[in-house]
Image 1 (cartoon, rainbow, N blue to C red):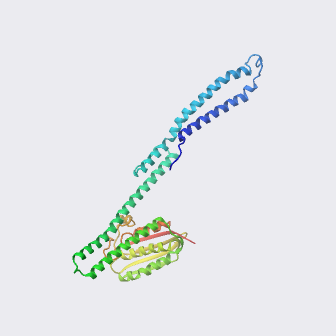
Image 2: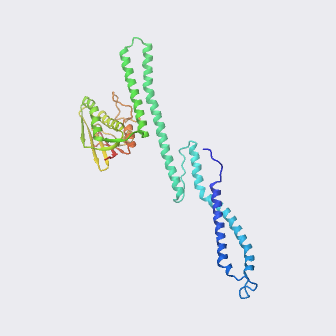
Length: 359
């Protein structure tokens, strides 16, 4: 932003210090005149003929007062310049750090020493902001790299299939079309997931009253054929859990949770329980499933984009794109809620979503 040149803050503070000091000196001289000099007799004999009269006192006092005022002005300017520099030194340090960050060095930190005051609080807040910004930028770069890799894979497979078909015209056409359709479907699913993730991250959606119990029932009804195909019992229990938000995003959240619970389960005879309830001003959606044990150190990575645990990775048609729980986490965060993942002692996972309730 273009700004007209002006006085520096240090110079303004210096002038202010000097001005206040000069005003204080002038007030002191005014008090001396008002309460001392005006009571001195103004005659040739003075007070009882032994003390100087007002004329002599004024002519003796005035030059000394002028010298004192000049000294106060100079002292105010010099001392004010020094004090302003000392006071603004932390601000200069913060400005230098901001310029360093502006040049792309997000790892720079101020780490201001000394006791707590307004400048140290500002520096600490600035360091905290830089830490969050660095983490966010690193996450975005990692996400972009992973997304590019995931999108490049189906395109590369399609290109390979087309090259093989061109070189071998006798190859089964139906098989080629089926494989191309599967690869294209996966690419479309990944693109839609990325768009949904971006939309939920921005938080741009219209809020309306939503009942999590109805959302859970709709998600379970949609995925019931998949559960029956895998011989998994799918139950929905609990009562009304009203909240406010996007019905579409909350439905996708519940669908992803139920689908993950069905897919990452025992091959047969597994169970999935979806439970909704309201606790005061909080609405809860809980999805619990059976399955192999989940390592506790694996839990923090499950909500990261394109992260798949080795024990939870699938190679069938429901392998997914690694964005299921990432989308869930983003939707929950956009609605001001919390997402908790906990391994069950007997195997499987317990996922708890807490959202602000609505009347």
